[in-house]
Length: 282
Image 1: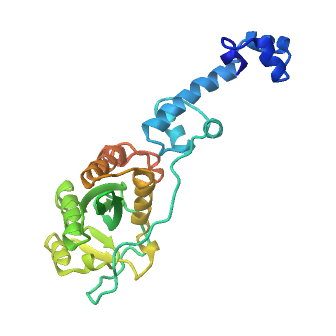
Image 2: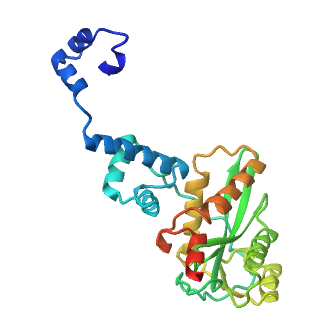
């Protein structure tokens, strides 16, 4: 502080007020910066670069993985310490409520996954769900389809209403992106949208196998719940989404530009879904 204000105030006066000896100040000022301090200053700038590039979504673990991909071998504890000193924390979590309504008399399917969210190949198991987004113009509902093999978001759809066409559009996108595979297990909760005749007809038309969670058991669709949670924390929480159109663009950017292609996933050895599929296919 004395150094920064020395062009405005006399050094001896500031030292007297702050109870610091002038000789001690001048000795500190003229002392060479230590190599460790210089390294930490440079590393802090690199951490800030990655932290800002990922819009405050990355904690120390993922930042270290990002450095490793760049050929830099830096310890997690060192990165975590520098982040604490600078007050940098990954976006915090908060609780969210359920959306779909399972209080109906429509037919339901057997739970084929039984909380086994592993997959040995692409298009073996898909999970799907609906979540909500609040905007300045009202609610938007997001239906998603996730491939459990690579955790890629293969289908999604946005609407102002939580209807059957919403979930059908998300499934149609997944089918188009994956070139209409058959035999895929498509797992959802027991919401009326997923039990509807139109949705079930779409599954049958493409020879997809329906699976559903037990009533009220969020663990039966934990992989999809986990994605919803990450999406809310990383893309929605703390954002000022004024219009539905602005929100749609924001969701597209998060899913297609960031999540599928850039975000490192712990279950994939800290590769992004796209890079994981490219690696495994290669």
